[in-house]
Length: 312
Image (cartoon, rainbow, N blue to C red):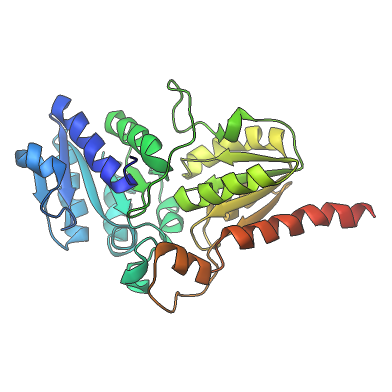
């Protein structure tokens, strides 16, 4: 049975920490009584409570002493409440801090708008020097944690809550920074569907399986440096893109790709500009925001029909 991203993170970090004594696990009161890292390596586990800004500053001190701190909390609290500390410690000073932001997007559905995070990628992307990873499923999450643990770069890793998915198959030797194509199908096509994150990738997989003349490219890393490195390859695949991402359009991956590729058409299937008006499951809140298989299929058909109308 697959683990959720946040459970895969805890398990994989514990595996790594058994072999690497520099790994330190910091939590903002999310661990519960059965946190595997706390149970197995209590002397390197610290529950810092609801103190996100101070936690980043403490992580900076640990990194200064050549330790590798992983700090986990809600995406909304890390990216928004601790933004200044992230900007200075990770962006400006390049401290080797790894933020693991669970409850990304609206995955904490019942917690309401205060705990939702549809702006975090835009905020972190505006800072320099921070790698941003949005893994899909247990296998990719584990690989991202492995990559983060050996990289000197600051990391922001966006996860969901309890959703479990099987990751798309990636060659073992490939980094998650490499674009991954569904069914290993990379060819010139009318439309390239780009997915970022877990729910988005599930939608993109369905679109790919039920549409003609499309390619599905999954991006795990969406920081500025990686997106810039992808542009030549993406242009070789298509001149038209539909980016699916559990985020607002403003500051999204689609908006950044449109700046990097002004010669291409970049469309966005996103969570719009509304605030969710009620608590519900992850899927229910996404549907209220217009982010769903059905709406994505309708948007894809509209995009594909544009070409037909132009040639009539």
